[in-house]
Image (cartoon, rainbow over all chains, first blue to last red; front, side, top):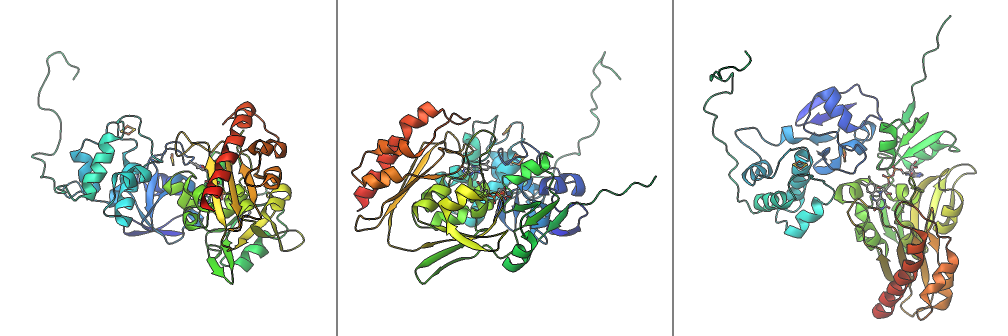
Length: 174
Length: 267
Ligand SMILES: Cc1cc2nc3c(=O)[nH]c(=O)nc-3n(C[C@H](O)[C@H](O)[C@H](O)COP(=O)(O)OP(=O)(O)OC[C@H]3O[C@@H](n4cnc5c(N)ncnc54)[C@H](O)[C@@H]3O)c2cc1C
Ligand code: FES
Ligand code: FES
């Protein structure tokens, strides 16, 4: 079985009834699609299959031979985010972040099929996605601002790569 | 002592309707996977361990044709696509799950959904009965085409659904349901009906009052001005995880009344 995942071709060994979610997380090592309910009910495993948002936990590998899969890892990179990623960042649309990958893939799919999405379109597109933290308001605002093109997708180079803290706190364990 | 290797479960991906029918045979020991929105959690949790599975994704059963006054919809057409179908099928399809699940779940899977753990599923069944739809299926004894209500009362578990068809007549449609608290809640009760523009041939059915949808013949006999409470003659209500029989007994006449009013206003 083969899939094109974030633009690269993969030959896969998982049996055909394995869920795409398990293929992505366990065989390919892509961890953005989360294993939540694994029964279609929470939305956090959502990825794009040939451009359309779908539940990875409900999709058997054998049904999608040759398909193009996009996960959050394929949206943008830390210096150049996708509009949806940048909007989530600017609007503080994630708290614990567990729902965020599914929300972002559903929103990306929505803006691809309906670039001028209205608030009702956004509510409809995210209706199957559970967020236990944010209360949804900031997520909806983020998607609407991405739809309106009101986002800066570039991010500055970090001043220094994070490393060991240089501050020594007296009495702290070594 | 030699140990025989465990047989790998067989998974077939037929490339045409003919291949799917041949692979299904008489259906013994075969599990059919349409969109997988019901089956995949069962497989993932190990509650279902099929010996032979047929994946319908590539079998060409996703065609939808309107020809010579008949609408023919393949079993693998998604519920999401049916939001463009004639009423009351369109309204029911719009209220199934959320965008992604709707786009993945199929018409065939919805017809064969059967009761879930403690509650009925298959919200498209009542609209199909109201549209006087027929199911073409294959299995033991070969292919056959029969009314949806007969199919549901006999064989949904052991046939391969190939296609659903109904006459594309100029009928008026009505649909009403108990509101779902969330896109992922199943509809506890819904009523679908159609009538010809001349006001004859009323057909009414409900989903959620039993394991599969049922036709409400007593309501049909009473006509548009009949007593909606007659619906209770045609159902055997039980308690389940979604609603009590007590509540359904009170709400079924209300929903029937709403649908009859919709038809009267449209006529
Ligand atoms: C979060 C969530 C919410 C949902 N909400 C609703 C809802 O509101 N209303 C509703 O009606 N449903 C709902 N469902 C259930 C489901 O999505 C639909 O019933 C869908 O139409 C099932 O189709 P499927 O192709 O995915 O079924 P599958 O999982 O592929 O199969 C379901 C059953 O049908 C059989 N089957 C499938 N195709 C065929 C065929 N062509 N011939 C013979 N047998 C076949 C399978 O063997 C299995 O027994 C929901 C599901 C989820 C995960
Ligand atoms: S993990 Fe797939 S919907 Fe919850
Ligand atoms: S941010 Fe925690 S679940 Fe949404």
